[in-house]
Image 1 (cartoon, chains in turn brown, blue):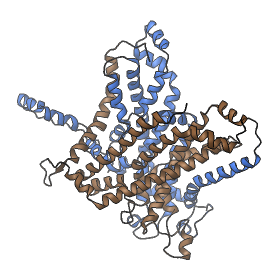
Image 2 (tube, helix red, strand yellow):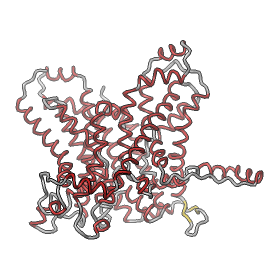
Image 3 (cartoon, chains in turn green, red):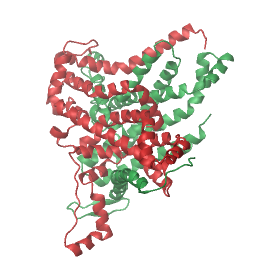
Length: 293
Length: 309
């Protein structure tokens, strides 16, 4: 802990003020506002909001569209995360062997981090379009076999692939950094004992990576709840027939297209609680239990 | 380590090349589509090799999306976010680490919690705040009865209004209101030895002088890392500008323009989808942040790992 400080003066407060002011106006106030809206209903002809208790939540939770949105969000979150992490873990482990071309591989796997979600969505919309994309061959043989603009589950598969693709780079960066922080003496000791590279991957590196795996799992799941908006908006627009209407997308369309602020606020609260619970798990559980050093 | 593993080495390259192909293939297809004309890009077997129309398509997409002013706008916002974030995070962390006052931990947690809820989750009420950034203070004035008091005393009713819709400020401020960088700096400031602070005090340097002359030169790599991350973050914003910027002609951002290029009923009127233009525009929008990430790779990777975001 630090022992030497500067004498407390108005400077300390002055330096702190801008940040506190900004997070008050743009973070705490809106969050509190969301809670207020979630428990009130705006009068149709103006005149303020009336308190309605849990009615907004009851409406949402009895709406089958909401539950299908929750379901597809969970499927998307788990599938995209598993795919992205699986792939980046394998790639990071093999890149970490540092054979010839190691630096080139590393750069090539990192840059997709910089691509905006809507750009990924638009590119994947082209790639998987039924008329001229990579599956257009299939449609010339059996017309209508592949069409994510009409067939729900194919649209879901498409957003999962796009989401997973977008997250590979992020996970890869963390896995590679974690692998490179494994002490060389450990690897050498294992090699001395006759463990070949593949055996070391399974018995040495993988267990040492557990904290990173958990960390990335939570981060990726959280991200897939929030960051998916751009992908869905340009890739499917929530369709076909609401098949890809993820939670964050539904908040947007209910709030800004349907002008149902109270309903959107209640949905925001549910999503907030979900994201906060995940973050909480991250801080409490993961950082304490899974630690090997 | 000397280890002979020719078969595994070969396998490693095979696996890495497959992985690389999977990562690059989608972008390659987008690039190839951007180099063909309308007819070629819409015929059934997807083109795998580039054609001759890249430059023409890029020019057409650039004109169609009016990218000139939009790139300028995006650059202004991105730089605004970078500068704002780097400065704010630095002074906040400095105050939290180098002063010892009561409530320090409380303030630390107040800032820390903002990491939990990304902008997308609280988008609806944040939009309402952006419509009038002073509304929190107005509500507090009204609720506390202070406004009534002022009214009876002076006869003037205080109505605070600061509309941030369709402005750079409205784009930048909410993006700066996170804790991302504060922690990067805090982690680093905590490693600065006490002796340095004591030496500075002994020499009669005040806190601001210490910050400027000692800490900022020491945290150059931190600044580079944070700047890269924030630049990419700001450049790639989509939902926020989509909402608060309705005057696209003057304040539009490039990434939002992509939503107009989605070839659907609205943009082509049921005609042939203009994939070649959409892909050319996508490539142009992607390029600046990719260039920055590759160029700043060393710092950026370290910063990303230290901020956990």
